[in-house]
Image (cartoon, rainbow, N blue to C red; front, side):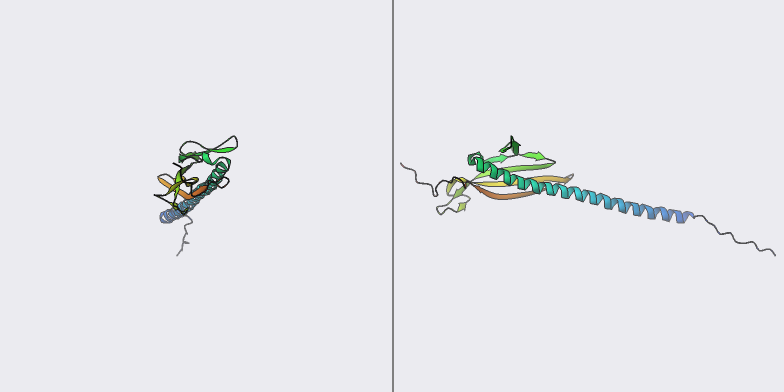
Length: 168
């Protein structure tokens, strides 16, 4: 009796091939999702850092305008621009690198003791209420913003407080 040796197959079966392709697709998909998520996160963080820098720049620009001429701090919504080495209000907002900035200036009122009040009181010509709003869209259909409410005062040349009574 002749016994023939069993031949062992050295190739893959169809099932093994399908499993290998599925595992490879899952692995590649996971790596692609990880890379995409990291890239989008880096873009968002970049915008957030630029917005923070713009907020600091805005505050410094307002202080520079105040130090030059406090009366240039006019009420209303403004953008900012650097012109001939000097900051100035320009338009109702400004945009740079996909980040929008708006500075809203409003009047300040004080009571008889010099406290800032919202409704009654006397107008304070040496103080302005400032709202700085910085906004950006890291992704489509999603927006983020940061805002700061503060006051700006005419320190170099303040008027006396309380204001003297008007003479008849």
